[in-house]
Length: 504
Image 1 (tube, rainbow, N blue to C red):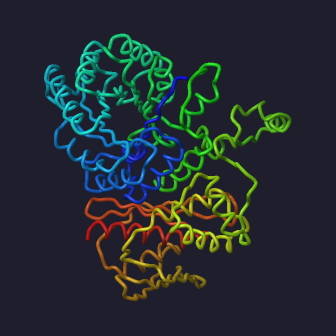
Image 2 (spheres, rainbow, N blue to C red):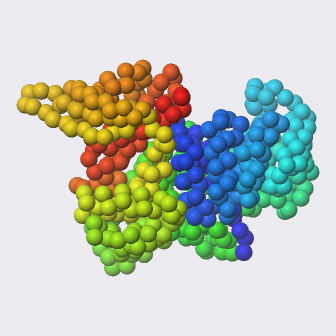
Image 3 (cartoon, helix red, strand yellow):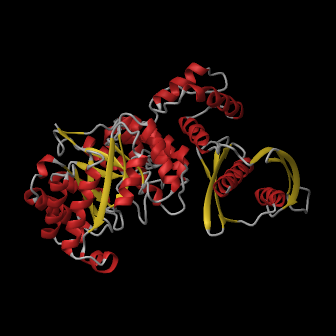
């Protein structure tokens, strides 16, 4: 069997999605779910980029046991040293170092000659190898680099000790035929290529990242770099779920290929990432979109009822959608709750089960049925909580008299001191936010507020996501509730607690 490895960069390249900003606790929650999913390598961040990234990589390294954990590092000694420190407690550490190789990057960004770049590759790969055995080298903008020169660069990397060579389509420029031809050329010309993994990293600027990744596999690549839901900088990255299901569904083409991915964990992982990042997948997104298994046409409905294979090439339960008949409600006990968590692949530590179960019971009192998406949202909500919160919401009331604007009355704990404020606004959320602003008397701006339903029922939970700006830096807040005003309040306070935690 030919093993295709999955290198997930949701926590590094995926976090470069505009306005996404995860804290260490949220990154660990996602990393644990990626490990449950069966991801081979988790790129936990870029250790030298910020203290927050360093701490997140360190935390993930200490808690992930099955998957390899890697940190990105420029081909610079200091970057590599910081990455080594962040990864020192990992069971399976990897350094992922890179340098650009294309003519445009050599001339305008690096201002280095071909020879200087090759020398840097040799020195920095060897330096990384002196700390950790597992070294991945990436030639940034590889697909706009001269093929012959790319071979020279990769030869130098292998000689210096690289165990994985990554070929990125950094700007999402190539087509599947071009990717196939380039990977084939590299496989035929790099010395010792059969002793290392050849990896592909595609961006989706032209909507070709998945197709290009599949072409790379067919040409001999053994590692795919991707993200959950395809999130990432600009138009995003290759979607893990799409590549996995292409390999699993098209056995006629990929006979003899295997992955470590547990497909039943795809949907729970997708929902968790969506909730924690605040980036909702479009309804028609392949595999994980709301409409991916919906049939509105009468002809389609008739066909699916007669035989699902008439219009469904993938069964929903294959990717973890509607995987069982265990429906939870207010009479459900802890055993059923724990069983549901296990079915969804959400492995929760013993000390957290009781808190989550209590939150589940509160939710079950408000809803007739608690759906899978609700359970995932509870876990996401727990991961979003800020330790050492400056602001705690104790109580709020919204009222409105005929002909007047809504009035919000808010009871808060601010640094342990009880504070009561009231305010009028254009709507209930606006009034509540003005009351909080009055209590804090600080200078910040609400840049964005959005509200979305987690499920489709009238008693559905809503998730509110806000972006708060202070001194040019953005802070994201999330909140969930069956009450849309309460969801908005929780999101605003969550964002403000992030702001104050980072600035104290």
